Amino acid sequence: MGKKTRNVLIILPILLTVLSGGFLAFYPFPVPPAAEIKAALHSLSRASAKQADHYTPGLYKQALVSCDSAMAIWKRENKKFICLRKYDLVKDYAILSAKLSDSADKKTSLLKTEMRDRQILAIDSLNKLVKNISEYYGTFPYPPPIRERISRGKMLLRDAETAFDAGNFIGADSCIAESGNLLVSSREFADINLREYFQSFPRWKRWIGITLSESVKTGSYSIIVDKFARKLILYHGGKKIKEYSAELGKYWIGNKRISGDMATPEGMYKIVRKLEGTATKYHRALLLNYPNNEDVARFKRDIINGTLPPSADIGGSVEIHGGGGRGADWTEGCIALTNNDIDAVFRHVKTGTPVTIVGSLYDQKKIFEE
Image 1 (cartoon, rainbow, N blue to C red):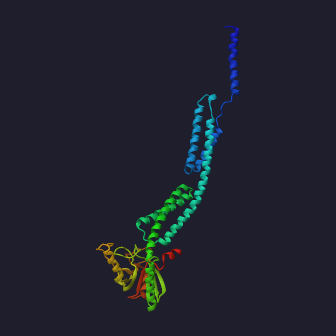
Image 2 (image 1 turned 135 degrees about the horizontal axis):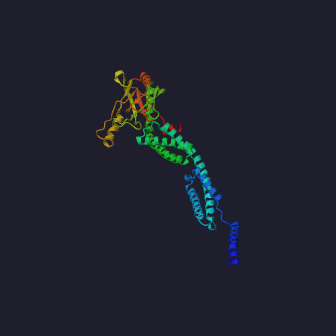
Image 3 (image 1 turned 60 degrees about the vertical axis):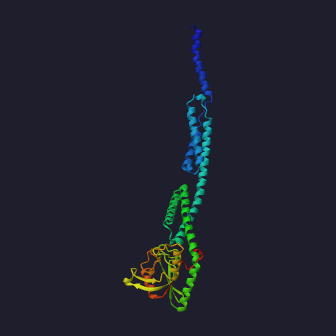
């Protein structure tokens, strides 16, 4: 090998080293978009903390997919030779993810505020509805399935309040909707039945007028029982002396039709016997002349038209008696007072004293306006 060749072999590696060093020093190698990735992850985390995945799931999912795409492309590019790496798509996806996350974050905040404001009104409205049901329909003889709906509606309302206080507006929304459906439908059931029931008000009003007119004329005592108000009212000479809380048959709404229907009859009756001591198991009692002629006539019509079976029994032994004060309707059709109250009434009345039992002293409109 000549001297010239040896010099070339010595100089060539040095030259290549210098050239490659210069290339590496001045070649614009692609830089990973670390700042954009960091911003995307931060925005995504912030949106997740606000539960954007629940409140704005579409936007949040797009942000998540964009971030995943950025990370996947970054990983793929890093496997290439450094000079061949391209991070443009990584950057684009990261920026898009951050924008989508920020949008989901803002929309979630707005939606939460909107839901919170709406739920404040809804919960307040449902609490008023519960109060309304308790005040006006608390003694209404709902069938067991309707009572269960009311109980569940109240329970769901409490769950809604708990979820609301915890900031779980989606959970609160669900509970509010179901609670409202149960409570509103239950009240509508009562409304329909009461409207039908109060169609008898003109007849009740006529009975009351006759009873009080007779009391004025004779200067004697008379009793009117207001079933809806749960009151027994004692009159003398047509003037109210005192009223007493009363408890009725379990299924008090409507008229008594047969024995065992747990309904308190409606009509114009009289006291036929005063019972005390061993003659009654309820301290003292005033036996009424149920069934009266009108009850018997109606019972016979119901047998004839087939709304009652031929074997039906009209019942009897309806009394005003003691043993009350239980806070619920529990009798088989009688009117129960506390022992002290039956003592007071017992002293004033006698055999023959009129007892008129009506659905209400007032029409439905006046009751609910008050």
